[in-house]
Image (tube, rainbow, N blue to C red; front, side, top):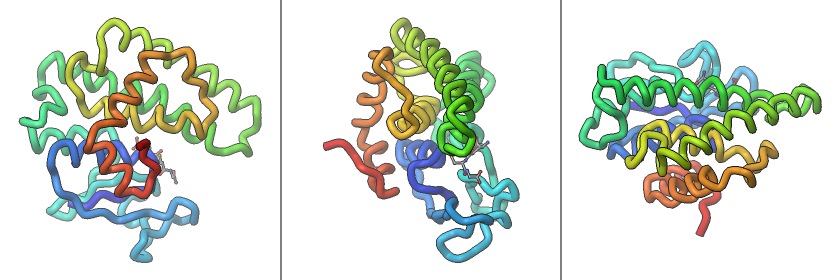
Length: 208
Ligand SMILES: N[C@@H](CCC(=O)N[C@@H](CS)C(=O)NCC(=O)O)C(=O)O
């Protein structure tokens, strides 16, 4: 299987999940700075994902799975013993899907594109930061009451996704000072060997 990724973007989440699950992947880097995005081999990435965005997972049968929230579940389901997703059909699985959907729609798509494109202007950025702060209050309250991870006592695929998106906060000037449990979560997840390995492999800076 091959993961199409771009350094430090949302594709870090399936990268982390693959390493946590012990799944060996091939990787092909996508250059998001050029449009249409070429891959590192010079291929046109829209031939892989017509929407042009990462991540995309090319399966061994040649078919392509897109959407980060679906990809992390697919990978984790390949290794149920990793405990990264609850069993399909259980209430716990729906609870995790609820978190994955929340992260995708309420966080990911508020940080990106709004806080990554200064051309949208300060007003749009202020609105996005205010909305993100409201959503992070919800996450903070949950972690304080039911943490230390989103699913409680165990690290799951949803945590990899949350870590990836909240990890953009310094760059996006999203202030985390009011969220001590979330900051502790970021430190806790950031210290995991698989997370550090994924970040290092993508050429990201990893805390000492
Ligand atoms: N709905 C997609 C969105 C993925 C997404 O926003 N990817 C960004 C990087 S974090 C991207 O590739 N942007 C470049 C583009 O849209 O052309 C998902 O959840 O996987």
